[in-house]
Image 1 (cartoon, rainbow, N blue to C red):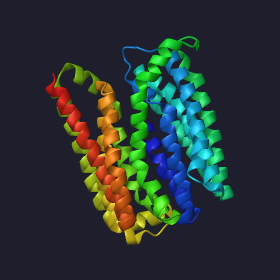
Image 2: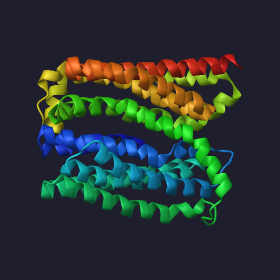
Image 3: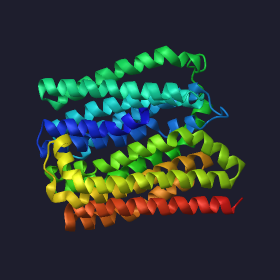
Image 4: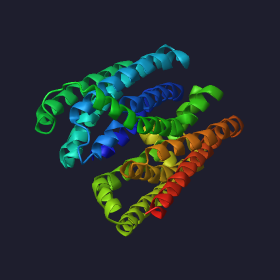
Length: 391
């Protein structure tokens, strides 16, 4: 539920914005939301994934804490830089700053959620995640309904998240973390260097997933940006379900990869099969009822994009499997290979995306996204094949 609500947060915010603003305004808001999510990767610095799977305690909580302080400061700096470089208008600047603040609080909270996860307390990690996102989303909704102003809604969400995060840290963190927050320069810097490939990989993954948003912003219009964001919602839905399916099994994957190949193959195949069943069923439902559902949930008429709705749902299946493969790369310690895979995929995707989007608009955006995920998946399977061949 925690992972699901986190993945669904973007959907809920977009849904609420769609009911109280125009498609053009949705485009401005969602571009700011996308930018804050990319900056979120800088705030995380890949350390949360490393911390979650650091079962042998190679680094202390103190090391992760000081890395987080530095990465959060870096993300704030890049936020202020981005709004100027991208030429955002007044509304977009306000949305981006507030949403980045929200994401930075979540980035800091991930430090403690990963601590719970590392200590086999998935229940606490899930509860913290669920209730923080629930409270902040309700605050956004209440403020938007009352004021019809997205800026006030974003500010309310940020305040609610700060309150919820402080509560969960004060209530549980002292049970698991090291005593004190003393700065250990040498070991913390080693952690920064080790996590760097993961940080760049996560950042690259978000750039790869959201590159089409910026291409549409630069090549078409805010209205097209809004339409694309809504059409992308099925992708988020698949990502929501996939997180629920495989995240509780990450520790089991870790054990299987150490003990033998066969157990890993069985579990991986079962989970990929389950994801694809959900994708196919979802695509059929979206094709049959998508126009009606999008009108109800997002308050916008997307009848001219009926086929694209289903196609995005299918492409979400590639993203979902890639999310699982990403965590397997982290467990296997394939950080350099992971980074190289993203760099190659981006190098292929961006020039293709510019050509496709400039010629066939939103259809080109879907095709560009699908190609990017297929490139990424091919690279992951090649890495796995080489890993097992070397054993």
